[in-house]
Image (cartoon, rainbow over all chains, first blue to last red; front, side):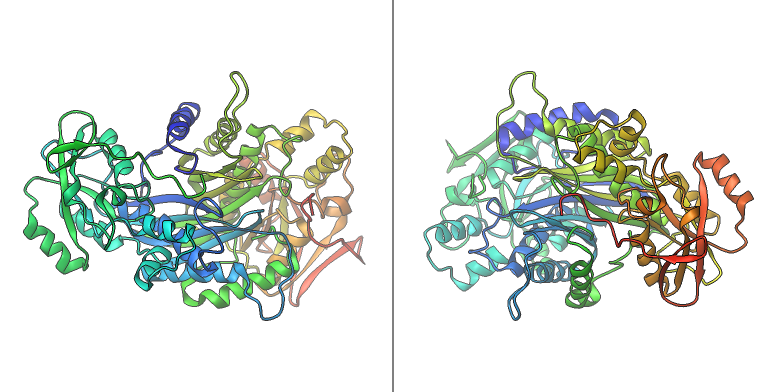
Length: 316
Length: 316
């Protein structure tokens, strides 16, 4: 529940909880977790909307489908789940007839959805088509999880780690806004983000106490994790793993990164991170610590610094 | 996948299957069925869009939420599943500030979603909010199923039965279009349809060979069942159970009824229907038979009659 903006969004979420009462179950985390037949299922839904999450002149329809699906699968990664499949509602303009030889957005988007789902060994389980002024890709995902990790389990003394490198999404958006071309690697990263499924599973199995995917930007998602775990986080700006050419202050403000922010017990050391890298083929970098208290503090070589608040989708 | 209209819709669905290849799983039925930990899960997604499925001057926001949720739960009913919960993406106009004391559409819609989900003993498991020019309620549902009934299992010799009475939805729409008031019972039926969960479960347990919920109208959904089961259906117009004051020809064309059309073995008799009624508190009426062949034929006291094709949502 991220699209309406932090302030109003969180108030509204609380009001929805209050309104629903006991019929609400597991709202407010990356996934709902339910037990069925001795297994734990993880479920999430994530809508991507034209001119909020994507623009059709920046991404192909195939890329739009992939990216929307990756965003939803990223929620499964954040609890340590293994995806089973996705259900997709696709909003497209009315009954416009297709010209012979032209690209059909529905087929192209579904092609991207299917490719992304296949990349994590899952299936397309169902769908619906609807008429919409703006393109809309709403993806519900389901997976199984052996050891579920929530946002709220971090302990004082835990280390705080980040997978991969941050800042590519923000850099790509800046370039696209200025109509500058993207390098091949930047475009691949922006248009085809990989949901961190095997990373999330590895971290869950190796003792992660809390985890969240970085969709609102590291600064914003760290605040979510701190609030849910009821503790304070200190992050070192100089330790942030940055995409080539990106400054740390930009990297921590970049959203839709789909990397994982994870709290791991103090005993988790660099040699464990090396084992993670050997298994998952992704870096794991310690960026800070969990402390008693509240709030998120960024330090630049020990000195507190101001960091811009959460990620605004480009069209706000 | 119903919103774009029969012809184009079914062609498109086939093209999506072709495009997705083996990554598609169970598309084209009311629900996807997947096995997890020895249990079978049923999943479906169903989008309701302003000016296609509802109008805000005809229904309250609470009713809009209920109706969209009932439509999705009806897909679970149609396979004989027991709902666990729903995930809801809600599209509303931008960041408009709420006036003090006024109704918040988000809270009202979610209230209706929650009430409908609670009415079948399920939960709201997650959600997302998005900006949309038109109100949008996209509901993904999950349930468990002991004996799943698909559209494609009917056999020549089976009887064809319908739960409840048909025609209220079409009658209500006609009245609303003419700005005529609805009777209390008609309004209740139109605004708060009950997903036929216990009916679907009872029928599944008692030998249903094929089942579909009536969302496109009896004529349209009978055609889906006939095609999936690869046989012909004869339906007797004079046997159609009609909402008070509705003619059979109107009843068979009325969509969004959310009753069940079910094929049951020839041994299933009126006394079994009486047992159904005693258990589920709903009528079950034999309307026809399954035969070798293809297509759906409506008979009026033995004489074939033309029946208008599928349900067009009111805004087409």
